[in-house]
Length: 280
Image: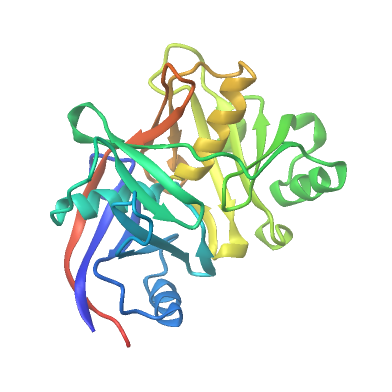
């Protein structure tokens, strides 16, 4: 079948400097196997499929695939797919856009200037990391225990475990051993000196999902914000940088509203527009 297709660069206002997501519109007729095969073919960190909602409160339903399989939630595909849905003429039922996906309903708001932000979903797993898992993380990142300031599980769907290093330079200097990751999906964060444009540098590694290093990661930044703002390491609102090592300039805006809800947002821009021919 032939269907509309967009490729959207997320967390950047400039094409080619964020994280691309492939978005297939009108995907109700596609099988699971075809979606998975198309995601392997695009070979992007995520490919998404827009479908009719099944929940009465949802504006659309989204399925999210990496080259290695389906995810219940991911951040940059959520923002990029909402951008594509709106650009194609989608109209939300209420003030916010409501996305139906594997973790349930995710709310998105339009920020000043037209950018989008999603409400960080609850964590499925949180809390300290057991010593055997810390040892696995150290081997994968090629670092030692004194390099780690703190570690936490921050799993909101993809399975993230997070490590806080002493500063942004330590994050940028990592040379991971991807063969040692096994099933780990590791997020790493370190602070920049105060007064700069960005509060932290972030890197996300998920080789088991076919994504050795993700350019800019919404779900990871959401989990990091839930952990580090709660613990007072970071302020309620800040901007993070991600993708520097990969030649990107991703910017993720974190904002905590009066109710305590964390919103994760950034700019998106369509870089490819057309149709695609998919099986079935």
